[in-house]
Length: 535
Image 1 (cartoon, one colour):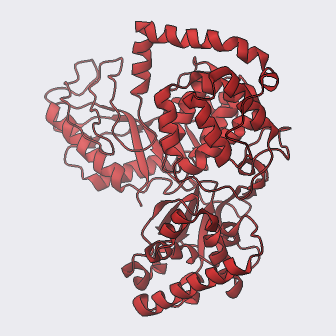
Image 2 (image 1 turned 135 degrees about the vertical axis):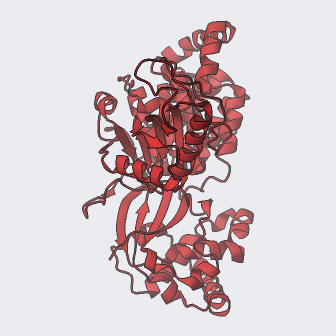
Image 3 (image 1 turned 180 degrees about the vertical axis):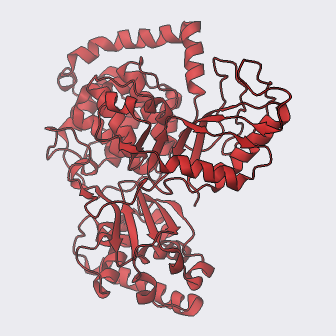
């Protein structure tokens, strides 16, 4: 699957309009074909690329090679580890995935720290450093809702807010509009079922405040109830708010009318509305196609139009300033400057063997871990493994097969069987020579409760897979699963990478290595990649 690459602003200098348009098409093809860093879950944000001059007769392959050469010289910094000042000075910022990037920005918002780095507006549509806490959290939530992995990412993000305290979620709720909650509810459709329910006093306190301040029939309160259930909090949806418990965040209750008045004032203020409209036209996180604003120096610009497409269609005026290409110059294209946002996935350089990380309390601020937090925050341990070798590189080839055999439909009809896929993987890995420390075991988490009936049903599904593979693919389970690869597992993504010579025509003809994208019962976006030698 091709990486999603977004160009935020493209500036082209050329001696003629036709040449400027031609340059746009060349760069469009180059962005599609260039082997730029990343091809999976990773988010890589580039501040600026300046292409050297190239002739009008240059091929897209030549332009792609120039792009590749520029990207090879870039050094990316880990956005999760550095502060805002260091990110502002960096040329390239990378995150393990989009959820990690949004979590990093959220931590800065909740800490009231500086968040003026250039990378944040590229990450979150419409974001500005001057936004208040509630408005900034609203944009982060809506940005997460636009991601394909939103059913897994959004509950984890809400879990972080709940872990931080009532004030964070309260600020978010007061900033939400009715149509915002509709978008958020739609984004969480098909969210993975929590492994267990826990008694969560923090959620109960937050819901009491929400019911007392907003009203039990308010769409924002109803959405918060849904999110509490998705996060694993054992709350009574029919319970009435306790006024005494709701009075705990007294400052928020007092601030609620002021917040509503402020929101109404913004809606009535034409200048603020214009600023909000301009901010909302910022480029999306994925896809090429955001409108481009003209540079201050008046250089010609080729805008992009249409989601997922890069179209150089606007007429570019000739450069008139001193030092520019003259009208009598030969048909050559001058320097082309790009401000590029590349949403991609793999580290920009080969990872070291020590790059495996295990996090036991997913993105919960220090000191906030507690036994009363929902499973999605601490008990459902988010394992992050970046390009770790695995002996079960073909295990996830079973995902398209299980979907084809009807497992997804069964899970939709019977929510009680939500752990059936993990049981299937567990039985298979136990039967195969897979080491106990292999990262493939992370896909069998959380620990399963002993259930003989569920075990027998998983065995029957495994037998169906074996029979289908023998009859229609001509391969056994051992040959399909036991193959070397590298696997990247985050809270929202799984990327499996194999060498190009590992392509199996039997698997390819059967369509088992076609990217399924978001897999609800796996709770992650799944992608397969070829081309990296893992020997």
